[in-house]
Length: 318
Image: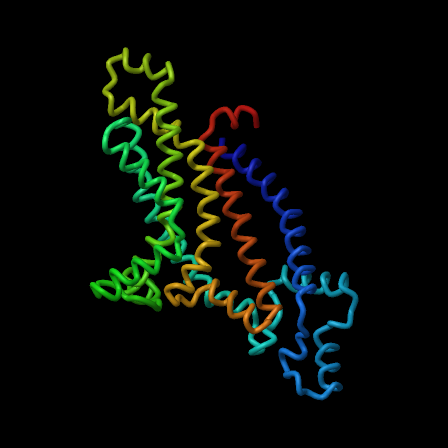
């Protein structure tokens, strides 16, 4: 089983390589199409033409685009994503500083969503047609309908400004100060995780209702098995497709953190991305987008592995 899972993951990794190559070409090409001159960004529009020309030559901007791309990829696979046009800082170092903040925020949203979605989906499915089911369906509808930035502002005003229970903005790493770090992540985590919780709740309810109607559970009941164990059997099988949705939603959480970091003034990758766009720091923008994409691909590989592990039919096909 372990060797087959390893072989499956190796095949997925090999498939991911052309995907990443295609993404890197797309990012590189699109950023080169954006108006603006990196030499002017670095030296200013009033810089002498000869200095601007020297900077362009130093950055390799006069080389053909294929040559620039090969140089970029060669450096990137060695961990060198270039240097910022604005502050001359290494892009990989700037990303390494901000990445843990975004990952903590994404993890907070992920935990919030599962904490809400799993009990809500179970209660809704096992109480079909009753008021608990109505609450679950209502939450599922509201969660996907409310824009997360609007929810964030609402929570910020209520719990941060009016009640003064939680910080309204900023960030402290949970590794440095666990209590303060968690307090700073509560409101952003709820804001980020609510939409995912709604999607997973609806998916889990639907899959569990479908599973509870299957004939094999009648045979399980005829053996005198308690309803709780019957529910456990059904839940295990219902989770197979739900795992895929959870994995995809985790990737969306990573992307959604860009907006949440703006609302709560969190210095993560999203803020770095927005700052790079505002200052036309294209090399920084290119690096941040590439890292986001790599994480998204990695999450999908992990999800594929979990799906393979949980689904006996897929293991048989493999």
